[in-house]
Length: 164
Image (tube, rainbow, N blue to C red; front, side):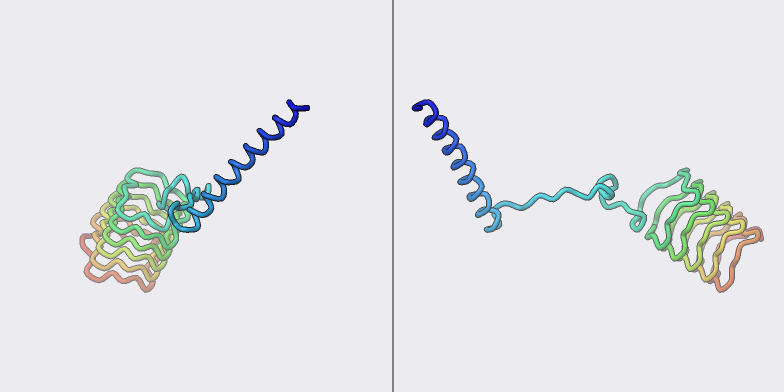
């Protein structure tokens, strides 16, 4: 009987210690001494803030992004030199000063895209939809715009000769 009472007393002491520690931690947390830790959600943990909406200053040279859903991305000063962007959805994208030298944008949706001051030297824009795109001061030297849709596109101050 005495042995059983000792075991019960030990268990009560352990539970009491755990309860006291829990109370102390809750008080510290409530007072702001300890900051709660939250884990990132599984869908964003891998990219740590680099989503399709924020691609500025990154280098995607030579990367295959064929058919990618990149509508309304912010790709300011992003490098896509030699990238495969065939049939990519880039409508409404903000690609000011982007380097698209030699990129394949054939069949891409660039409706309303902001490509001002972009470098599109030798880029393939065959069949791309550039309706209402802003191409002010873009460098289109050697670019292929065969069958491209240019309705309402702003092509003021274009640099270089391009193929139509």
